[in-house]
Image (cartoon, rainbow, N blue to C red):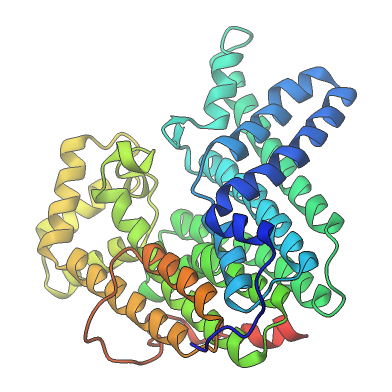
Length: 401
């Protein structure tokens, strides 16, 4: 990393550096207050049932990971003028609304009753209207209302992006990244759902879905957005995107393990949701491949009877965990997470970044990767098995277009 050649940063930017979450939350508070006012003018019941829930979900939960990455990337790339910094906070706020859309609709598609330790939005609406109609109609209504809530969050996110003044030199690249990211999210989610209905269990397919629906959207694209807003050169953007690609995959693989092994009180969702929903995540697909290769009929029997069983008991989930341990799938994924995180940091360390801004961003990426910095890991790019070649197109050209 190079030493910063910038003069002293404006005080308000230093204040944001100290607490990005507070700054993004203030932007969201202002934007959502205006949206709620408009919603109430349209129809109070719409404002109370949907708009207020979308605002509350966005304001009261989450770690603001994506908005933090946008800001830290901007600052690491030397961004310090008021226009680009203000845009970064607004882009971060738009990402939080986009996350609301993704999570609310994901809970409907997965039939998940909880999110962030509280009832999921569709479940909350069902409770509100439980006495007004037959249970089946209330259930359909709750699901439909949550889909609309997700659409509303997406509309507000796009509105916020459209109303954000972007520097002329970076506007095209930023808007292209935003456009691509939304499509990538939908593609990844569809692959995830299609694999469930088709029964497809494939290691490359599981990785492709994870890359599209999470690694890109959660890490690589936010880094690219911050770099684009700062006007970073191609080499810097390329290094950050490579880092984000690897660390984003580590992030998603860690999330898959957490679904099975982490304390639900910490994750805010029920354990084993991926198994009950029949979601072929990489760790579950790997366990099946290993069991088939070893002709482990007992392990295959456990996976066959448990996969997609919405009524799977805690004891049954323990059996699945035992298979993941016995086949070595859990240990293999943990090792891959460590390797990906290390690879990502090595890509990052090759970027010519502002010294202080780069330090803050690196600390955040270590956390996102899910571990302290590994030692003694060879420096190399993400392996083809870990990152499908068709999906590793350079983000540099898109950002600089």
